[in-house]
Length: 292
Image 1 (cartoon, rainbow, N blue to C red):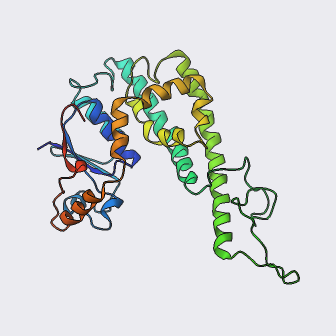
Image 2: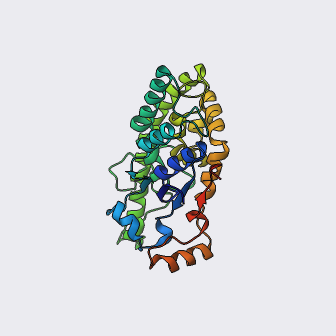
Image 3: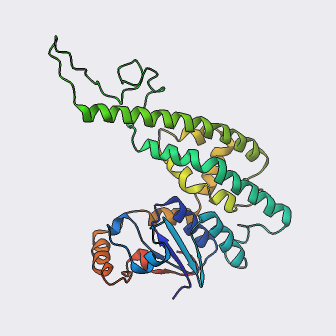
């Protein structure tokens, strides 16, 4: 039985970071899904660790952690002699550079990228260039959610489309404003990345490290969406960097784990939930030292 256990959903950015690191370091571990696929039922073992149902819990022998970047540091240090030896660096200067860019990701990249991903979920596949700049009633020349929102006019007998449609249009306009605001923030940061990656292959130097790894979950969602992928494609060095880090076999395997479980796996999960035992589905099996 693996001493390392990861509780959470691979679709979570926090969990995906940790899985990627474990695969890079070839650490044997057990992934125990605790996510929407399991419905309202939660494993008693997990609830003891995280009563409020946080997105991620990591166990390594008697140590329990829940912050993904702290977990990346722990894995890279504890298992330094196996798998990828470069994730945390070796010398003091190299490690300082890794820490600097890891903090940049945490403080400047994570929030705008996550909010862009969130807002895109509410926006139509084809978005206008600018949100509506009028008083927010949805009837200006700007964005109205791609719909014609009719206004009740007794003299003409026109019909209102309904409160639900109007609310949806306002929600989409709100999300577009959020998207555009956070896009500007991310563009400024990626311009800095572009300059840095002119000088180095990766953010912290010549090797792939946890500073690069930590960007993968949110960046992958933005780069995979045609509405936002130009953030990466329009910058030559950022585009090259993104292609290299996202093409790693370990990340591709994490993405394979993000697919919803099969119907059989979900049925097994339902059968095992009442006993508090993790069903032996693919997601609950131990991963060997190769990571996959």
